[in-house]
Image (spheres, one colour):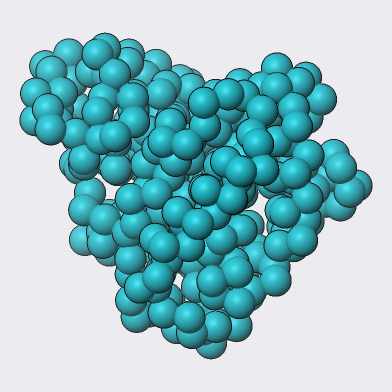
Length: 295
């Protein structure tokens, strides 16, 4: 039994699971803690190591209610990957929790995330698929054939980093939205435009888009249209953070960065020529579970 702890820019999440004899993931417990350790620009907040250590301890204690014997595996993505003081933070967390953090390269993060997405039975096993995961500090994009990854890209654009770069007020002006759109379009310039059979997306912004699809359109589905994402951007841009939280029940830690995040998602869809995407909850943590099972 493995407890995978995923240390991101905006949240710290865990998955307690194993792979059964049939090769399927058996999930016992999954949880997410709001813990924004990124201050933007590759810098961590001053108390990042304390936030990480406390979150790890909380998640381990919660997992013990479901299983007494498991191995804890902590992985970190762009927030720590880009931080100049990451070694000090890793050492401090190890001293406080006895849990070693493995900082994934962008390529490895993309590979494991794609592996996790392919384990989702709700995603068709199409001959070709493109997968993306938008985090707080980076976006991973993978092109693949069934379970085989053919190419991977990690771009330094994320919900937190883009918001801090462009957004100076809670309501987002049309000019700011255009600036963000132009910025992400340039970031995608070197990404191949080969259109795959399906586009699969993961990350907090896609989860929120799925929620908005239900709240605004009354649609309960893992399919999200580009036209709807564009509508969500327009609607949310005219609202304060508190209004987004109150009306759509979006977590405050997500509500302030959601417009930028959705613009990033929409920009990728336009670049790749996809008018819709399929959301999956099977992400990096699921990929780590599968990868550990194969060792």
